[in-house]
Image (cartoon, rainbow, N blue to C red):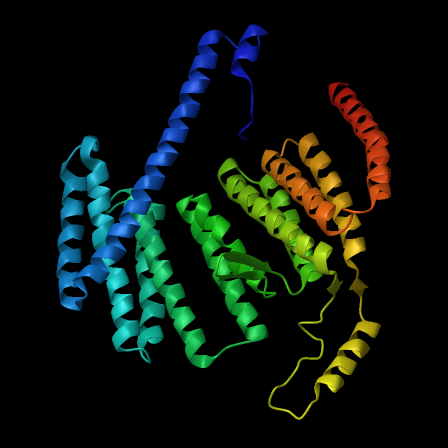
Length: 397
């Protein structure tokens, strides 16, 4: 597990030597530099691949150029030393990306009806071959194997997307599609050991309950039509991932922790929606919807909505604000006690967002709310301090 430590103070306290502190600092710097290099390299490969495909705009030219780059990259990796391996990786991946991406774009553009039935199995085939090489070794470097595996998976999922668009899938079946996508992304992230891919799984997982985003001029909007159910969904994922991280080796634990953190972020965004608008639980799923093709009047629709709200759970924005504050407090304390830094930082960040939002939205003209909250925070802080002392004493005994 990665932890934060003041190496200079540890050396002064005699816990580690000055040389050990220097080694720790050098390794930390190397990890950060490697991350920045890999990020820049990956972004360059993606940009060059897509740019070349659209610049050439010809299927045969893309295929020939892509094949030549792939072959050149593999030759460099096979015969040239480590000094120039980065160029081999880049050439091989740009070439493979042109072949796979170009094929997908050509199918969608020229053979739309047939596209998903080719993309679905072809993507799985590419991912299967590259994944087998990734697990067993051989063919080329792990970086190329993993990237081609992800390209194959992307082609497969793109085929799923085209098929969904063609068949106009919606409702529970669409939720299954999102769940399938989330499962594949999480598995792919673990196989390639790239936590960014694992983190992406949270997007389709959240969309199973229509939680998502929208963009329009000068605004990027987060939407959660079912904040309570989405919070429960994310809480279940977070609990499962925290448990998995505690039961697994470090590699699996890394991916479990990133998914737990992403689930916590989405849950807090849903809570923000609930604290502003409240929630009529289940309204968008099993509540009365408006059918524009029917003769239902707006008054009749409103009456059906009122009847539904009368018999289901409705949480006001005020109650949501209080519950969210209590949950954040508990989560921050627990994360601090168990050294879960990502969850702690996320909790503190959203505590600030919650306070800022409610200050202007709900309690801007209610000074008594600040009096109650301020005085309540003092014994709460004292209680947390005493709890921490008790836990430290217990751990030492």
